Length: 103
Image (cartoon, rainbow, N blue to C red; front, side):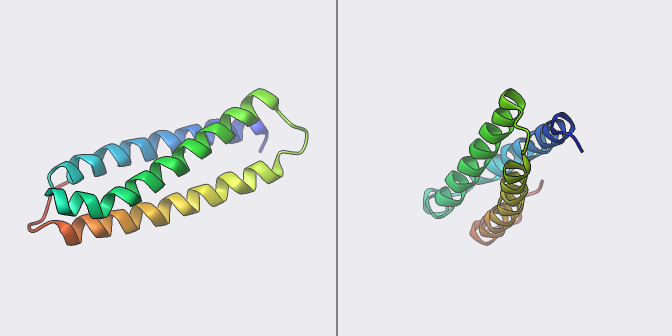
């Protein structure tokens, strides 16, 4: 896979994560203040991971290094971290919600 194809794939993945985050934020908005406070750190962590990944994709796109495998590994690890933190956040939302929140 060349760097352009990889960047395109990562941008598509980032768009999917943004959609998931939007849905998660809609669910969080329905929670009480105390529950939101508990989940806020997870949301901040998720946003930091997404921002970092977006910067690295942009770096690949603009600099086009001859050896981009270290950045590729970092982005792949970012995807793994994002998935784990997202699952943790959704579990916390589910536990904080007094009733099931559809969606």
